[in-house]
Image (cartoon, rainbow over all chains, first blue to last red; front, side):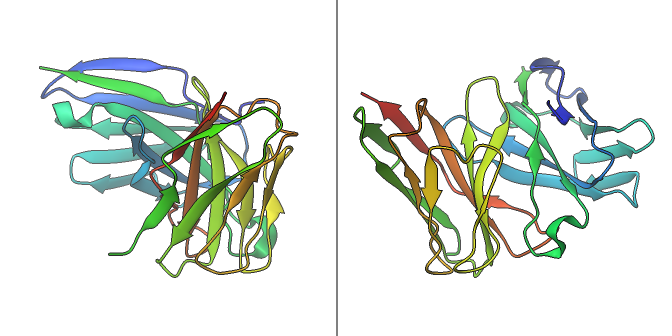
Length: 117
Length: 112
């Protein structure tokens, strides 16, 4: 049962335009959400995160929107650049799991973004 | 330079053989994790460790074992019981709850 879903396996966007990557989740216990970017044969790198107390978080060209009632989040990249071409993973974590220090992330299957010239 | 290192980059395993993947971090992070990535699938958690001398099974722990004898190190052993070991293995670490996980470069394991 996929608790974090990225229904679009790939997305192609022209340079300079907006890229919108979507993510849906089913577990209502998830309270913290992250986006990671991954190049081939490399580990994912953290991009941006959002806590459930917010509905928007912005960092430069990257903005994440959270709609908790719809259990949906999206990553907007504006303007898109060729270097943004990568696989983007959405991840989610519950708030008080284990009452400990480890945050157990559940990842989506990823969306491959191709930014064309 | 702080970071997470994984070695080797590529690893070949023969049938029935155990192999160990190395993960070292000098970020002073308490928590460490092992994930597996297969084509078309998200990252799946194998094992994680909150602190030294403690570790917990993740979603797909069968056929794997770990140890956490030092804060900096979290080696993963892929045992012969793991019937489909070919995958890209990623190690990560974080300071604690809600803290961002930082990933190593990964090890690709192939079965001969």
